[in-house]
View (cartoon, helix red, strand yellow):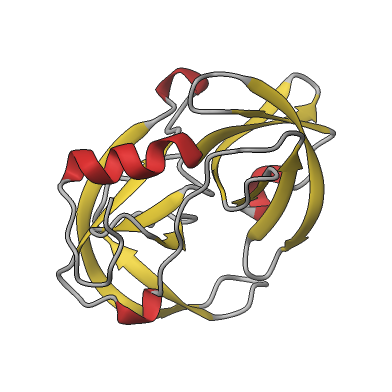
Length: 181
């Protein structure tokens, strides 16, 4: 599929292009507690991005590929201030997502999210929306202020760590926050 800047894919084309690179991240927090999030594979040798808050405090992590195949994941690194983490699963030939430049996004552009909202059975959920704002500065208690992309694409608990995808099928952000009024 085309990934040239300005080339617009249909929603089903975006889903088919990115879906296989999106994974569910299940983290054992001990005491029968689990953190569920989403991740996106960015290298064929099994490296993936997710959120720091998804993996923080975990004792073990399992990644489920889009087809449901489970892999034990190794923690590589994370940054709590920017709420990003890198994990690695064993294997080669992992499907990967293309990454684009979020600086080119404009308010009103269509964006998509694929994730695992609410529970493990909901993996692969696809939603759409528009870019509501770019470079939205948010200061979280104890966290670094950073520019973010605001969207009205439906996100729920479990979408954290999943990709925000442009209409050309490129990852332009990592979802990590849902604001309530």
